[in-house]
Image 1 (cartoon, rainbow, N blue to C red):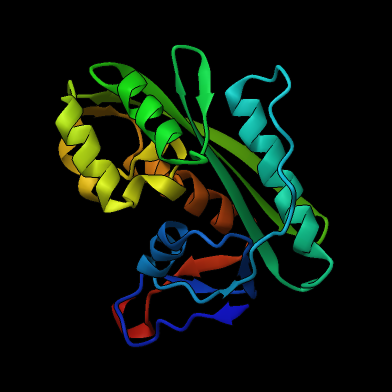
Image 2 (image 1 turned 30 degrees about the vertical axis):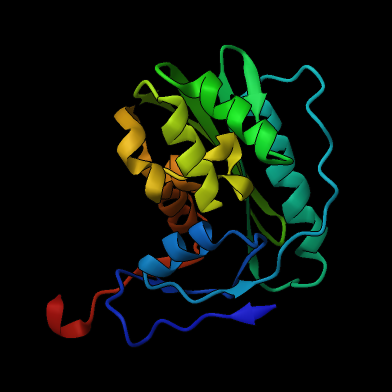
Length: 211
């Protein structure tokens, strides 16, 4: 568990209540930190159940809710943020690859095709609960075998849903994005900020002099 402090960087939001991010994802931590929010990181240790016929948007929402509840008792006075992301191509859910061979197969499947990325998130604060899922369409360029191997050699695909990071080296592979880019990275910030404001967990950072 670690706490973040971003008082030395520009901020657009201020915490009104303590926040806990129940995720070890550096991408999600960077997205929240970019808003200037302060939060503790306490990854959920939940053993994620496999999808059992649910729609992808329902599956990620289910996992986000389970993750939030798994740490909520440890932080009874904090707002818990948990999330889960999957890639869906031709009806198949692509999570994080277990090895290089699985990552290669995922990239071959995504090559030259449009796929969807679903992120579900849950905000849990005492008796208030908000769960939402967001979908984004992503079009990949046609990948040559040699560039797939070169990308695998970087190691980047190995802890990413769908075996790629849109904000990383794989950014050059993307032809088009229809929807939220931050959703593909791991948190749909537009929707998340709306819900944090609505639940009274954050407020806009405006000084008296600026009013």
